[in-house]
Length: 282
Image (tube, rainbow, N blue to C red; front, side):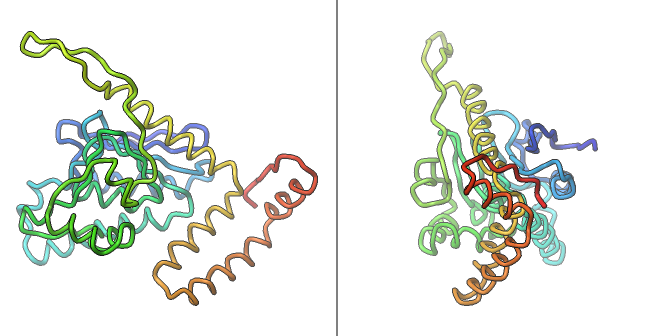
């Protein structure tokens, strides 16, 4: 499939999705959101794809937010539909039974931060910046930010970010639990500006290191039993919306389902026989 605003490829059972509007810092317009939904429908439908990594084109920005030129034209009715559409797309990503990793390079603001939060894990390059700056435009987050951010980092920290409209760096994002891992700068390079030479971080090499780390994490997951991975994702996603007792009931049910699979037999036999399991996803 040809996409207008993203790049899609699959290698070694991993789908690579790159938002590709570098001149707009990969801002999310209507067409880009359509492309994202279609790309993740492909991920869901392709049995050869076991995990997905999403990132932004270039080194400066993951996604710098929604396209403000489109938001400026909204009225109350179209604004509600705009929010509902974005939530539906991001909910689809979050509910996938295959792990999705956001490889965050540079700015992840507004809708970009919300998309990252809809992914199952987030890793960030050292130059990443996170924020929900919607209040600076007189609106609030509309793609799930007011709901996912408190669940990830707690109510107080989430409100500080949402109400101030400020940004935090990768180190702070990792400290509060918004990010799983940070990929440090991969060396320095020399540039010349106004006749003065200076050393700056090599963002191209850092982006390459970021994607390599995301691939490493994805491969560590897809080596496991795929049905069990999908059931674990379902248990966590559903359980977070329930009481502890209700979530444990879901866990029991899904645990019982996992025992019916051939992968369960293979995994336990491989352990007892001291060999590597060969999971087939059945």
